[in-house]
Image 1: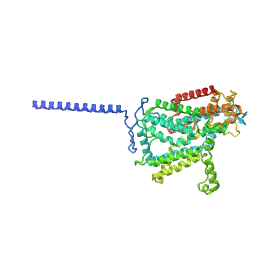
Image 2: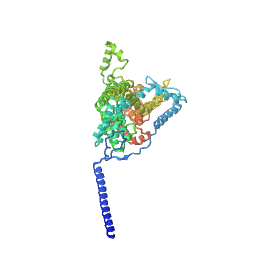
Image 3: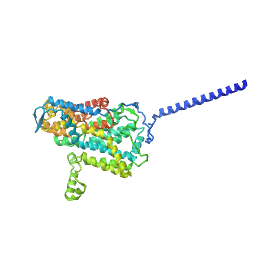
Image 4: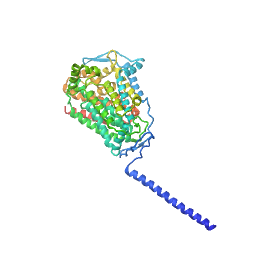
Length: 536
């Protein structure tokens, strides 16, 4: 019996030894797998919900990337409203301490105080929503378009393909994105057309694990930087050329150099300050597939045709380049083929399209995509409505961001404190001075978030005060760059607040991220101003 017991004990010991060896082998295997993953720089793919078929792995970390951030703080839906409302209240207070005034034939005439009262705190925001409703509808319809595209399933496939293609070269995709958006903005100035492509590129950037801030700066930030270094954009350069009497190629070399410098600095800044974030499927940029792999080419074709059409129709070719072919075509159709106008209805010639026409084309594009992918009427309407719903908050913020400019320019008498303050600043110098013009343009950006209104209202006072026409190009360059610089951070910048709201970024968080880049941009602009002044 003792021998049998000993044999059993010996067998147990042998079995335990074998199990220990197997466990050690398993540990070694797991270590080997981890080592292989580390050596290949592959991060585990994000686990999605079962109904979302996400195939892409998270992008590899770059050398300059911080640890993956999965615990971003909760977004405050009313954060931007506080900042916009705060600026509006400051304006109300200023109307009580600064007299109004206006320019007539370039000459300033001071008026009495025109303070805003308690009822104005309600009236002006409501009037702003009404008067800028076309932008609200435009943003809503962009959301509707993406709602339909996501419903087709092709959008999911497109994002997957792009993200997989650049999974190990995401810096290339980032640099391409920044250059693409910046160049489109600098050449056309049509930021409300370019913004149509923002959600698509944001989806890809987020799938490559770029943070919200990085994705924002690579798209919306690049558009705003393009405005600073605008080369031929009519909404900036075109208005300057028209009101101040400049040539279309005026200082084009300087603008190109400035644009290249800003784009390079922006790209480096994003890469250096990016903190990888694991994608959160509850964010606006998530993709929603219907589970069926679809061809992407019909969707891509409609999207490209839509954007190109709106860029061509929105750019004022006559005042921008002198080309009048589209206007002549429109007048020919109107005179000889009146039945076409009767069938189509009222429309504007190419070069004069705005938010209303953009919105109509977006609706048509949405319907075409739904038809090409055989969506039912119910699915089309529900997905379009769902997209509009997600875009509602950004749309409202975009509209409310114009509350300051409406309060300034919407007075019944035409008098306002902006003209008084501008006259005081411009009076600091009898000639065009870089610092004076920079201060004037900076303050103007705080009051007027639309560059066309800035130039339209102030061109006559400027040309009356400064009569040396050789300085006009220099003056225009300062106005363009400094006003664009302000639009990078002021909470009344329409495209800025729209982008921040869409990506759920708090304004204070954005300021902490952007302040060093703002300083770099300002220094570059001032250096260019000084360099030009030295050779004049």
